[in-house]
Image (cartoon, rainbow, N blue to C red; front, top):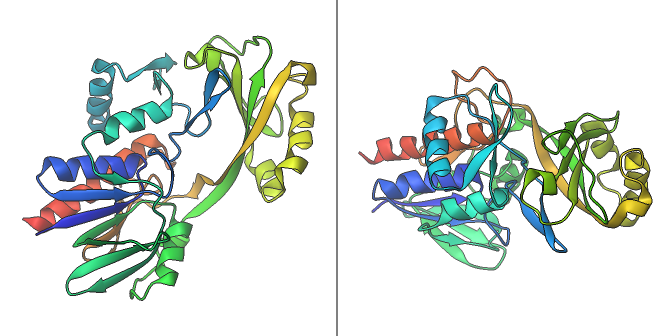
Length: 317
């Protein structure tokens, strides 16, 4: 009997799992985090909260629009701003959308997969916690460097060459709690306000926080240069970079989130990679061939999950 194991409970993994379960196939998810969602991440900050990964998503395909329309009808998503390719947000923070999508799915959190073996027609996924999960088919959805690390620890004869073509860049995010309200544009977001800052988002204006909390994204070059520095060195440097926008006397607290694989610089124009007949790698870096945007996003993660699930369902027929 087919049993699919999915590693990673971000948008790709959640979408694939839902499609497979809907088709009557047994499926489970493993995620190394303490919550589902991946970069659909929301953090509580005092009495407020902040999205500190994906802030919004856009829609370019009819297939994704159908899903978004359902989320809107279920009051999980709403339009944030913009007329041409509107920006949609999760009403209670991006992680709330992930938690809505995971309902009725079997997920095991705090499980980091270290190695994969294949014996007697089934895969064995070995976790850092010394557990073994068996599956007939696997979908791996973490960023490709993490997938490659798992393969390197495993005995599988897996051709990793296609995964090595994917390129990622990091991002440092400052999550800043303010004493007083500060407004940014009409909707709470400004992009590229300086040579080192990529984006500033005010979550009180966005409507997910009761108090003024900002997410400040440092740009690729600055993040790459300072990524491995300790937080005690990063904090004064970031305060210096943001002082034109937020004076030190306005800051109640500040914390740093490091995303090592935040942005996909080099994508693949295929919706997944078939490493072995029943082992697929999928994610936002895998674009369908008709996708002309040439960049990863929440929609590409969703469509990759749908395509990977369809591949395994077709194989099951």
